[in-house]
Length: 453
Image (cartoon, rainbow, N blue to C red):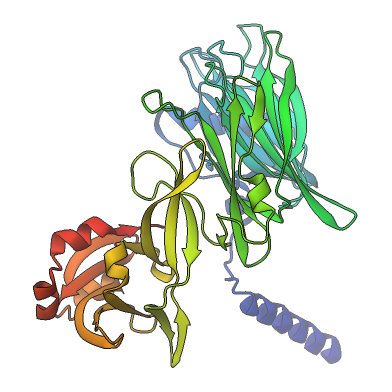
């Protein structure tokens, strides 16, 4: 008996040790806390009561979407355009955790009631979105399911409100395997399409296919077109840029594709109205040994210069900038952000990306020859020195720094001046007398500094 007890204690200790090594935290939670979503209040308080009534014979574990804009336990959206929001929640029955369900509730004017309980196509809910695919003013519901959080086993389903206006029930219109998806009106016809990317492995080689789904007037969903993209391991992000009537720019999709653990590239996909097909102008270049959009696999497209258009990050070696990690010095690359004008890529702005602190500092071509930069991770400072004519380090011009909010509020700030705040971080700057003589100004630093998240 004593031996059994010792074995049990050792086993428990081993489990806790493994959890500690995995950076997991141990939290004791009651079963009710684990199964139930956060309590609703106010006019939506009846949603939870209606859901509990509908599932009273089940042992419910609520599922929250893992990605996308809607990540709450209860998603409120007026998808049938009746002027009243419906409530959608996802759950599994602990008696069978291999299947997730979508449950829909509607307000009948007096109270909330259950109107649909749909068996899903996976064990987890990856994402939910809404789009109007036929321009009737009502939204289709796009639900992305995954199998035990797998990135390779995702299934997209499209549901539409039933034709009966007295019912808020749903019918399934389509089911597609996918890796990433995005609703978008890519041909600017007033109807949303769904762009899918699917990565498969055939004979040991990856294959990436993009497909555009559309809906006809009879609620039939079909593929408008498909095309082969650069073979990728994964899709870091999928974003859309809107059409611009003034500049003539068409709507486009920007897909950040990870080729290996060190490198990502961007695919641009748009709709060629004249030829009635999808185009991907960068695919051939992305297959080359040195793609134009090659960079670290951690960088995604964004509207970096806040001009309303997405830019593509690329990285170049910058001999005048280093990152200090203890006694080691590592190159700090220059990130050049490229724009796409519909025909070709062109550089728009350059910046040093201080990824450890989720911020960046734009730098001009002239400054590339004038500055020496040391990004010290331990000191949480990025120091800019003047570069002398012989290439050596001159006077310190200015310093960018980061500190925890609590440290900033209670610590010795010295000559540091507040620059920005994000989350629990305070960003600050300090300009030296040499920097002032060189022409560094507070407004200049503020204009070129940005929090990237």
